Image 1 (cartoon, rainbow, N blue to C red):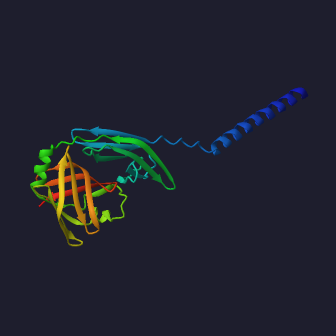
Image 2: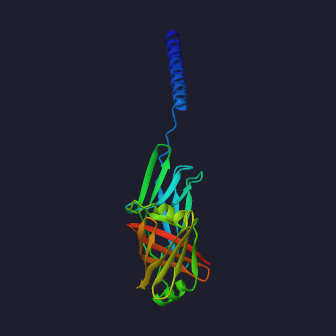
Image 3: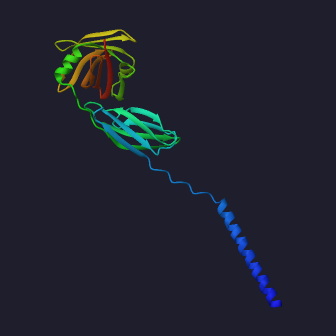
Length: 250
């Protein structure tokens, strides 16, 4: 009897120890921190519509509400568009293709103190659709008034001249006259006129020699983006910079 009692006691102790260890094990697991999910890889996809001359750049897996910038990835390149990712870390940019100019871009993502870049995003050049004859006739048909709100510098220049004022603030009038004569007028924020400029067209590109109050200004290798009865847009090179100049017909 005594041996049976001892065996029963030992068995009960063993059972109680097992239950205690199992309970402790469950308690430890419930208090253990959950593993953090691995961050998703930032994804960027470019889709081009050559018929509409537009491109979309779709961003996924960015941090929620991160700052997104599409920047021209060349020396002195400017941001072409900026946005904020939604709560799911997504956003879609829509950009125009530029006639005669391939856009090499990078996406800059900023969230708090962290940042990341995705490079090698390329938008192909759109076709330069106007012939030399169409450009000459179209430019001479109207006097052109600048649209400062739409005009912009997309590659910064190397000059000390205040070309940001020329592009974004000055109210400009371009007049392409016969015999290669070019009349340039500014009506705001100052009054200026230089009637003795020259212009020419060769291989679908427009060159303009004119003058601003600080001295000569040369607009070289200008690619005509749009030329209609109501609108003219040119992408022109000035002192190492690249300016997108928009005009309406007067």
